[in-house]
Image (tube, rainbow, N blue to C red; front, top):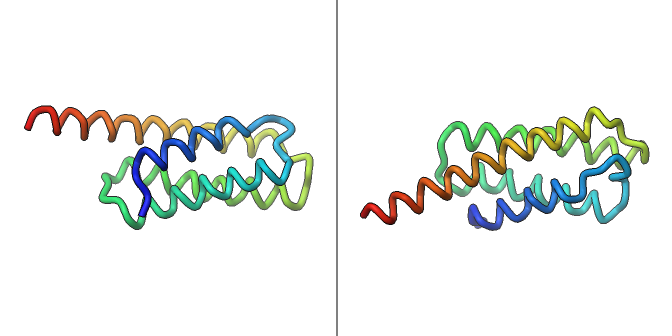
Length: 108
């Protein structure tokens, strides 16, 4: 099982390795991990639709990007940009979920 904090760390790591030259084996490994953690979060963590939709987008887009990076070392910038957008959306949703949970804990 994965926690929201672990999922947030994986998405932040994925964002950090995305660049126009994102074709190394290390980059692919980080992207695969972020994809795996997002998929695991969909299946093991109780969440709302917004968060699961963001996770699903990351899984689909990172799958496409990893495939492109493995077959064409000069991945198209468009795929990298889509991945960044999906990761930003998931990161936002994860942070909002954490904040909401903390607020609920504080209230009672």
